[in-house]
Length: 244
Image (cartoon, rainbow, N blue to C red; front, side, top):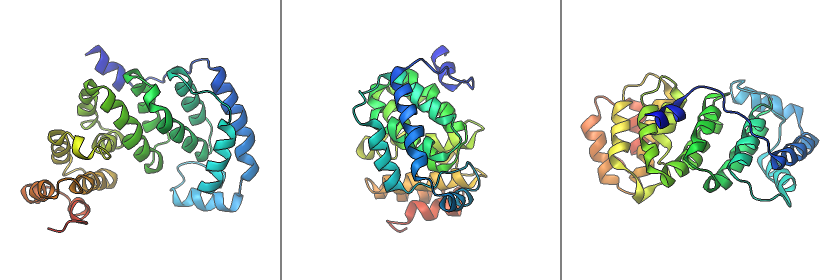
């Protein structure tokens, strides 16, 4: 119980001291602004519903600059990952958040289950699908795969009042294919079948559609059994590639 509470708590995680993070953030905040495009930034901010300001970097430019930032930097430990992620999240422009997400995707195997409260903070602070979905599938999914005891946290998140934690619980197995815990996949989808939020209804359909690539008959059977409860959006997404 204490462990479950620790990974569902809303308190702000501490930012540990990290010489590596000092180097990364110094380079990052020097490099990214050099390619800023104010006109493109305005368009991105509008497209993302004003969730955050942008520098206006294209994805190829951002990735190129990120490689420059990380050139010669050693691999991080968990404290370094925590410091990099939390310090990036304190910066207003969205591209810094994207850098943190990419960094965690690359080094999630360097982190223990104790890193999940940090990810929870990222999921619920300046949240939108552009960061939540990648964190859910690649970071939370990786942590749960490494420590199956964290499935208890997913069981709590699927019941959370925060729609982004609901979405994360639904999407954390998105890349699991044959390793998917189908009891949880279908149970979570049934639990949130009548959710009032678009992003949760979309996630129900998305995770079903993804698992349909592995077992289309199981997804068809689930949809048939729950069709009256599932939102039309969820049904369309679930059956998009396999048909009724």
